[in-house]
Amino acid sequence: MNMQEAAVRADAMLDATLSAVVPGVQWDHDTTTSGSCTVTRRRTVTTIISEQRRGNFLGVIERFWKKSGYEITGVNRDREMPAVFARTSDGFKLTVEFGYKGQAFFDVDTPCVNESDVAQPTTKPNGPAYPLGQIPTPNVHSDFWSATTPAPASTP
Image (cartoon, rainbow, N blue to C red):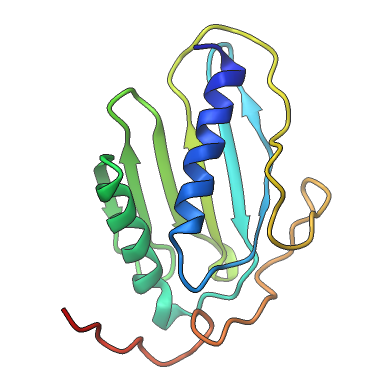
């Protein structure tokens, strides 16, 4: 596998992860970085996810990653900046974390692969495509994710 192939695989993991979030959230691509043999793909969520719904959001991601066969390697239960970390059996590392103003960030770090050029992602964001480095803090309202009441308990 070369760096471009690994980046495409990382994009597919991010696509699948964000598709598992229902109701959906708006996101945009963030900066891609590469080292001598690794690539990091990033996506930033622009939907407002209230503090009361962050646990639900992370739970959706964690359950999807487990169902996908990924190993959960860590959970940060910090009230303001919680996060979940996972790893695939072949060494891809996934992260979802909350940062400034409750913005959710997704990263996928590839394992070391054969060096190659890396193109920008081809998946279209499901909202505005902002210039790199200019993605705003969360500004898209969701009746569910932005609600300030705890989510109702799900029935088994």
